Image (cartoon, rainbow, N blue to C red; front, side, top):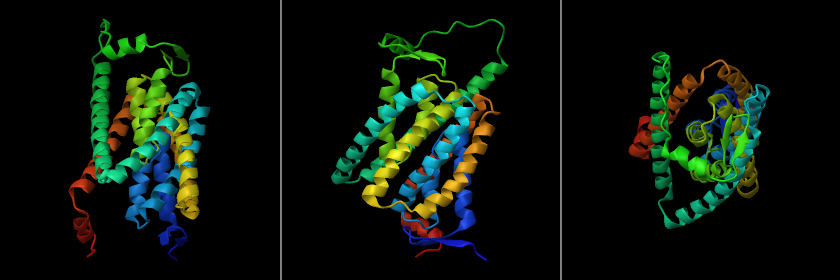
Length: 309
């Protein structure tokens, strides 16, 4: 018995264990790193013959479940800064709505897709490279630390943060910061998320670690909180206006990802912050290499490689 299942909206047949397995892997990443997993799931579904529009929309539906499951697991571990998450989310919704309009304008001007992909590759390369170097340095420093503490110089960025008004205490993250910062960063991530068609967790996690200076474990839970509501918004819009959500596909992915997210959250609690950052950085760089390959190698070459015509 092949265990194949027909997906009505996608007009395709896929193996049942394969779909649930894909969901499980993406859910695991979601619980571990606080990323939605759309960057990985959408290309995988396309590779297995699901039309791109259906893959993207059904995936955002599945991310809702994975991030809800992961967010709940992290909330129980005390790793969600709801106050910070709310500010980031408000910014994200504003940015996301603006980003969708920006895409419309870019598409009308032509060649928007290439511009989007190039932006994505450059961003992932920069973020992944920076995270990797910074984490390795931090781990080395810990090993070679001597008893004499070194006075750190205040950076221009820190001085700028200190000048901003309405200082608020984010107790869960252990930082005092103006809400203007998460709101602004939320808008920025929202725009990028709309342009790249992902939940934004990939950009949001490094932003929270390096620009908001939040501890890694709180970052993972808070990022899932933000990704969850961003994707709820996208899913509703996609299913209402484009009718591209395949609920059978989404449901199967959802079963796997809900279980995966719970496992991921438990594992993340056992790994130290710097190690977690290194693993995430490697993952970001792998995705960047994959996307660069897709840009450099013409599609007809790929078809020949896969035995097409």
